[in-house]
Image (cartoon, rainbow, N blue to C red; front, side):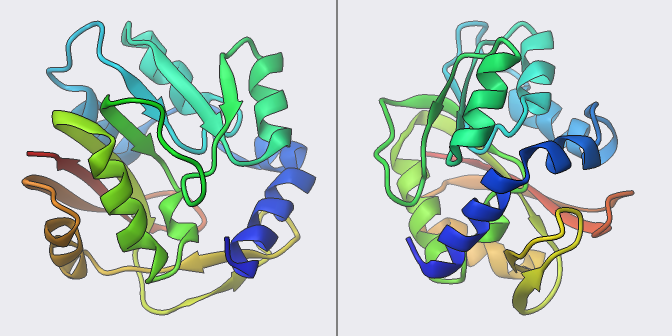
Length: 202
């Protein structure tokens, strides 16, 4: 891990309660439409992994659609929060830990935006290799230019890398994905402009 990633994870681990209290408690709008696209047509017994489950909001939405989701997070604080809320959860850092088997869907909402321009291609390729044939990777990024640190929301620094939708197809192609949908959306989040991706493995 880079120092930036370690510092960001420490911020999350030290501010679990502030994150829970400052985050929408229900899935709605563009994120809901994106998750619905990611789940559309999956078999009832699809193997689904969520990277960065935080307090389980998105996992609960997926479960409401009668799917089983494996919750993970890279911070012990959020894993403890998930377990306290009744989720099955484990520590998992996508930069350093191996995937456990092959998945029909890997979902990462507002997670890959913490990786820099060298790390994101690595994570995309690693995730694609962990998918079953025609499996999907669904992820969201903040739209914008450059990179930087922000103490908004948690009062402590988190690293963000911003992307433009037109730059993503080349990365997805290089990572080995066969097809993808990329949707830009203006949301009611503090950072309003987001990119929602569902990429399909060969």
